[in-house]
Image 1: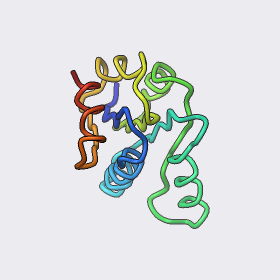
Image 2 (image 1 turned 135 degrees about the vertical axis):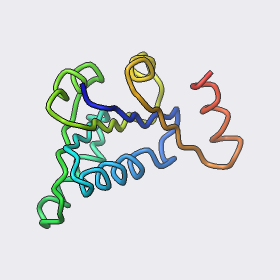
Image 3 (image 1 turned 90 degrees about the horizontal axis):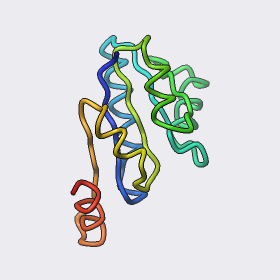
Image 4 (image 1 turned 45 degrees about the vertical axis):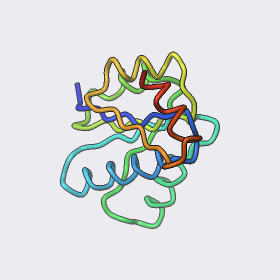
Length: 124
């Protein structure tokens, strides 16, 4: 079972994908085997980033896969050291599953009350 970092938030546009990509790239550069799991199967922000990066030959390559749910990502992650999960910009039952299984949960937020209030409610 890999170490797992899950980036969650009730809101989109708070930096989940940016931070998830940075962590995945830094860990891969340090020699870890990493999988970036993009759970936003409609938008696929992380997947598109990884595809462009890999097509341009930027090292190290990033293994990014799109999943329709957290359970699928956890099931397929047995072969990596680190699983980095980028959740869509809304909370769901999947958020609780991530909270129960992840070793670290990161919830980015903006400084306004409009960003912080939904975040506090999700964590509560």
